[in-house]
Each structure stands twice: as C-alpha cells, then as structure tokens.
Amino acid sequence: MARGDVDCVVVGADRIAANGDVANKIGTYSVAVLARHHRVPFYVAAPLSTVDLGCRSGADIPVEQRDPDEVAILGASRLVPSGVAISNPAFDVTPAQLVTAIITDAGIVTRPYRSALKRMYLGQSAPKS
View 1: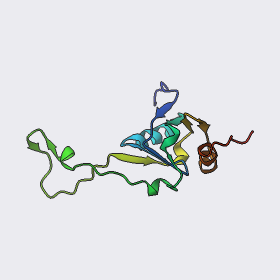
View 2: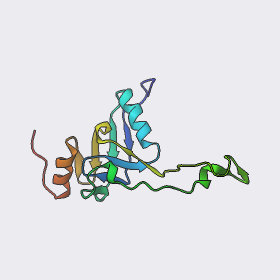
View 3: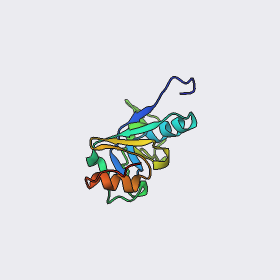
C-alpha cells in the first residue's frame, strides 16, 4: 500500500452489525487502518446472511478467545512463563467508518449503513440518488 501498488482491499466478514461494524479474522482491523492511511478503498464482501440487524454495533459482537497455548507453546517449548496473562482473540472488529462499502449477494451498500443494511435485509430497494 505504501508504494501505491494496491488499488483496493476486499475482505470477508463473519458478522456485520446493523451499524456496519464488521467482525472478521484477527488482523482485519489493522489492514483497514492501513488502507485508510494510504487512501485505499476498503470493501467487505459477505453474504447478506452475515448481517445481524439485532446486533447494534461491533461492541455487541462476542469475540471468541482461542486457547492461550496456541501462542504460548511452540512444539514442546513453552515460549512464555506460566501464569502470564494471554489474550488470543480469533476475531477483531473493524469500525464502519473504515469501510468504503459492503458487498453482498443482494447488492452493495454504502454509508449510512444502518438504514441501507436494513432496507437491503428487508428486501427493499435503496433510494435513488
């Protein structure tokens, strides 16, 4: 991105909140921040079934914590002392303001996501610009 070699970023999503916040594999948020910094469009592509209108924002998305030993142990070697607190989230949440557009099997939506996703989810067409 820094060299200008990236035209856009497209990522998937495990869950999309009603406001457009997106939960995806760990590292997605970092890529979104880099894309914003380098003025590269950041798109989320996911089936409409990924949208959860009952989930108001990314703060409501539960983030799975994976087994701490996945990062504490390599082969037969323990890499950190026993008793050290380890956070090993499987997902992170990318705020909607970093998302250029959400691409679904039912169409493409842009901000404001809450109203656009609701219309799409309910099968209504987006207003004409």
